[in-house]
Image (cartoon, rainbow, N blue to C red; front, side):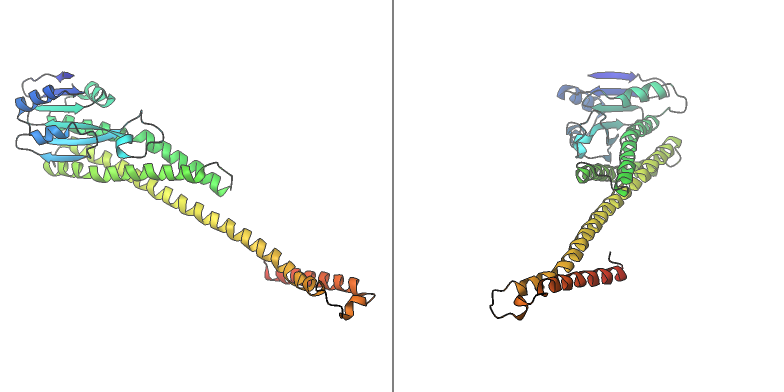
Length: 300
């Protein structure tokens, strides 16, 4: 569906939005604005990564924004995000996306008549800024989840599927970090081409803010996973130490029982009146000595 959000006027620009584009609509737009066919073809690829291209008469941007309707278990760029394509020239902006998105409506309502947003590059920067801000809610949720699991891990509270949940958080953090890493080139090229544009600088500041947040979250989940693995290893070591100490008590006792459990007829102690209590006393004494030794070493 083709919508003219802002008609062309003197000293201004025209903004055309296409939602769920058909091949005929794209062909008409490409013909009218002399858009490169390869770039138009990229608009139809749902899995395309972010990029920016400088064409002959226009610039072409693909940017991915967070899909608030995505499944909670989504763990790929294509499942977590949606794509928006932007063509812009001296006096026009064309936005192309597969389904309705709040980014277009919010940007249009807020900036369509703003005196400080008066050129195509200005409105493009505002579109990209709104797209970046869609990551605020999921990043905040991830940060909250990390704090929750961190407190539970240090308190040693049992949580079902803890490792699985931590892996899912790590996967989402990694995907977002990778996506921002790919998208960084877009902001850098816009800054290089429009150094004195205030809207470009505002876009850069917003991008850096979220990039730092993503780096912090990525580092936090890595640290939390390492802490969890270390605590799990420590717990395993404590269990092994307990079993080792426990077996140390029974090793000499088992040896004594093994000696006197042999079925030899000629064993002097077998017919000794105090043989049984003497052996029990010996075993008790060995147990006490081992206990005192472990206590002195600080192993118990």
